[in-house]
Amino acid sequence: MIEYAVRFVAGGLIVSAFAILGDMLRPRSFGGLLGAAPSVALATLAIAVVQHGPQYAAAESWTMIYGAVALACYSVAVCHLLMRFQFAALPATIIAFAVWLAVAFGLLASFGGAA
Image (cartoon, rainbow, N blue to C red; front, side):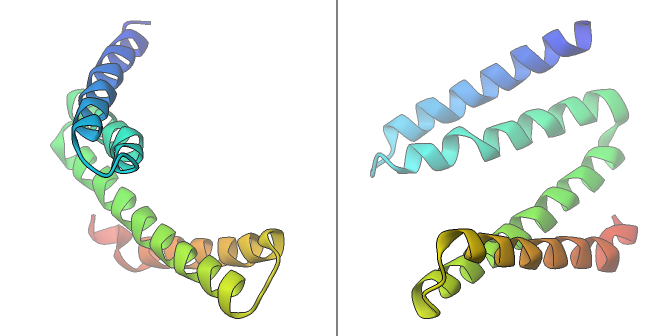
C-alpha cells in the first residue's frame, strides 16, 4: 500500500513539474509533449532506483529508449502510408504497429542482453 502512495506522490510531483514547464514554453502544443511521457518515465525510473537499485533502473531506461526509437519508426511508417500511399487510417496503423513491434523487439533482442 505504501508503494502505491509513493508512486502516486512521486508521479504527481513529476507530472506537475513538467506540466508547469510545458505551460511556460511556446508554442502551447509543446506542453502536451512534456506533460505525459517524460514525466511518467522519470517517475518510473525514480521508483525503480529506490526499489531495485541503479542497475535495474539503467536496464529499464534502455527499454524506454528502444520503445522511443520504435515509436519514431511507427510514426514515420504511418505518415508514409497515409500521405504517400493513401491508406485509410486503420490499415495504416495496423501495418505500422507491425513495424513498431519489429523495431522494438529487434532492438531488445540485439542490445537487450547488454543492458
